[in-house]
Image 1 (cartoon, rainbow, N blue to C red):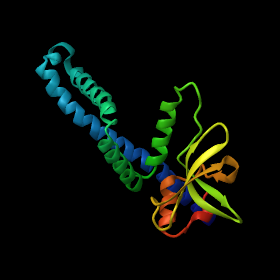
Image 2 (cartoon, one colour; image 1 turned 180 degrees about the vertical axis):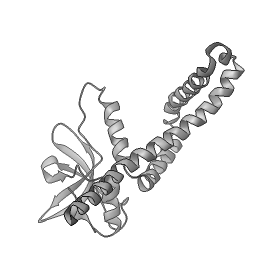
Image 3 (tube, rainbow, N blue to C red; image 1 turned 90 degrees about the vertical axis):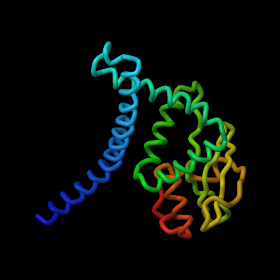
Length: 197
C-alpha cells in the first residue's frame, strides 16, 4: 500500500510538472487573444464589418491585427536596440516560466525546417575537453567540416569568458541540459554540473 501511495504521489508530481508550462502558455495565449479581440471589436465596428460578418467580425479583425503586428515586428527585429530588448525579455521569461526555453527551441526548429540544408544544432551547453578535465561551455557555431566555436564562461559570471575555435571531437554536447541551467550552475561555481546530460 505504501509503495502504491508513493507511485501515486510521483505520478501526481510528474503530471503537475508537465501541465504547469502548458497551463501558463494557454493562460498567456488567452490574455493576448482577448487583448486583440478587444481592438478587433472596435476595428470591426469602425469598418462596419460586424454588420456583414456578425459575431465573427471581432475574431477576424483581431486575428488580422495580430498577424499584421507579427509581420511588422519582423521588420523591427532588424533594429539592434529591439534585439537587445527581446533578448532581455527572453532571459527573464526563461527564469520565470518553466519550460519556456524548451518550447522556444522547438518552435525555432519547426520554423527553420523550411531551409533545404539542415543546420547543425547550436547554442547548446557542452563540456570542453581541456587536458585531463572537462570544462562547461556554450556551443556557438558548428560547421560541416568539424570546426566549432565555443564560449568558455568564467565562474561566477556566465557572460564573460573566452571564445575558442576547436574541433568537434574536443567537446561533448549536453542535449538534455538547457543553457539557462548551465548558466545557473556556473553562477553557483559548478554546483549541479555532474548531473547534466
